[in-house]
Image 1 (cartoon, rainbow over the protein chains, first blue to last red):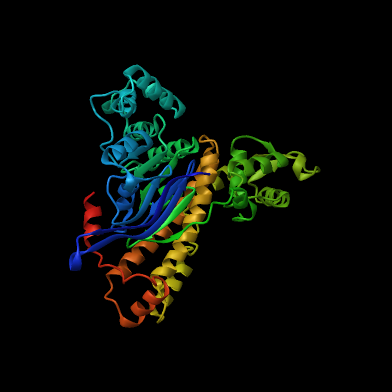
Image 2 (cartoon, each protein chain N blue to C red):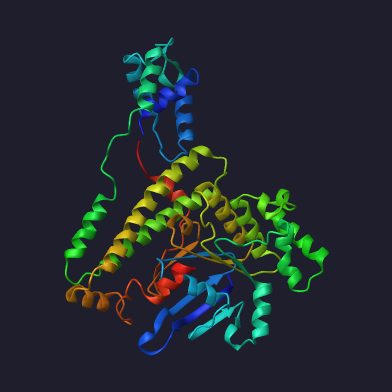
Length: 241
Length: 205
């Protein structure tokens, strides 16, 4: 498993002197292709800061961030923007899709913005919608989709083309548990296609879809779950009737 | 889970052989609660004595006898469906006691104790969620059993989170605070106040 995201001793301080606020403190995090990692912690633990630094939307005060082996701090602003367009997909809690574009046009948009021809981008968009079971919604506009479907289209857009890293911030937002489960099934399936996924959440049910859960507290990684054991052990000696 | 009422429910669909009842019981409960053959036949014998089920083939082995539910059995099943489940003590009680003990003990980092339990619970939730993720989404029986466990475990995690937030709001007492810094966060200062700038910032996002 090759590392797609590698954060080493990453710290982030806002302000200086007595007003300095340490949002992240010496965080180490490596996420491999095909792996979904959840970052769990309460509000103010530094989750969102970690995600924005991983996505090169913000620079760390200290430490290094490698995306696909490239050191983000040595890249020009243009190179960083290109990397964000080509290699990184973002999913936020809401406000993900453009209302004036159909589902497939929304999914194809990042490819078009990166210079791909409209026809090729649309074909790539349709391909990923098909792979993720949303082909029948391709021509629908966001207003005609349910909240769960909109979020699944946003995930398709985040993994379209040759994206290697998927960054998600509370991706099931205010969805009910059934729709939230559909979104998580899809996020997991997207990662199994070979993308590295990082999802931040305060929700244990959401986090439990991940291969690994990393716990953040006061800007510091304090703990993480062991790699999940297979379901076979669950059935062996559980609750007796 | 009451075996007798599960068996009555299966027989409410139509008459069935003993062996068939055992197989269907296992399948319906998502194979999470294994049931041995002996329990099925002894329970069927008891139900027969009580007049809740009947069979025409009294002389044969339980596995090969065909059973059907009686009107009395139907009434018993209907009564059971509407009766609240037994109020067994919730499983987190022992955890509440552990945390209460930890809060009073000098030199113990309670938040670190909370995290140990949080990690173990989330690991257990991961096992259940992965079981659900690998299963057919239409496997209703498995989904129901797994969801019940997930919501139960999630409730305990949320209680731990609430306990954590409560402890954060406590004014630091010299004994436990110094100890916590020594034990769990050797390289860092004490926890920031709950309303620190990143907390406010993240709350806005």
